[in-house]
Image (cartoon, rainbow, N blue to C red):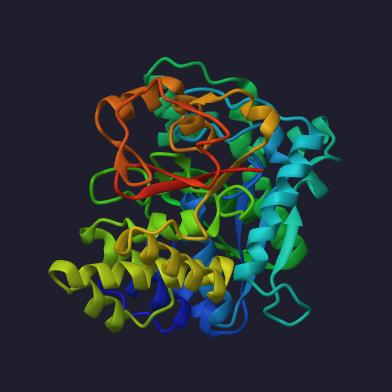
Length: 416
């Protein structure tokens, strides 16, 4: 792209690899240099925690605030009741209000680590779209808002078209989602002067709808900006690991496991991830990415430390690095490893090693644990584990034992 931005925010987005598309680069850039602007990203409350897949856009909000603007984190207390059909092959399970509120409470914990919520001009706002969506009168909404939407146009959006092309049913409930998201942008513009909606590139259709609706109803100039859908160099969706989602809440994933996820980044992704997920200067990111051979591991440790410090604090990052060095370099057990504590009642006369592996989180099922053992991928106290029928009893747990799945995933098992 040949456009040379004047605003710090757009310059940062381009330089660090955050930018996929924008509805009007020049208009947005001019707005950003004219004074403090308000922008938002919406988050549906479908789980109790955000995961690594959300982290890129959280960093976008952080940079927005750091470059002098006001971020809004919009919690989808209302839209979660409908479910976003974008690029999904099936309908989301519908959640009840108690579950949605519990999920929002869990997600809020993370945002405060990255954004400052205060009363200043650039202080972040935490809002919930249930505030305006829950009270809508259906007939008034159809008359005032629904008339601005062309079904032909909605059917042409890639997120809807891909579902229809595969002949997978799209319920009327889900079809309403993009109207509700568009209405969010209109309400945020009306109530808070919000001029920019951001999101992943799969949200482009929903964002454009909101801009169109706001222009028609309020005749206001507003903008949309999307980030690329992030995949790892081997084509996997960012944020998924062998053990499932990489959660951002410490009670769902320990800081050590989070650190370890970043330490295991493939060589080809290090430079890109340093620019997106840390605040290190771009030239330092490039320097680290250019390291060769075993030196690239130091770049990965730097990446893991920087990302973990932002989320869990410097102390947690340092502790995770120390544990990792102890485990990998000295063959020790490391005090900060994920730990499974079994009670005497649970253990009884003994528990099969397969069950212990599953309980420790190193395998999702007994079948997976048996396969791990059969393929020589499991170790017990750093020695190959070959007997899937092994029983672990109180004598075996007189002192903690260390289980390993492959070279990089470990857990301690102890008797409570």
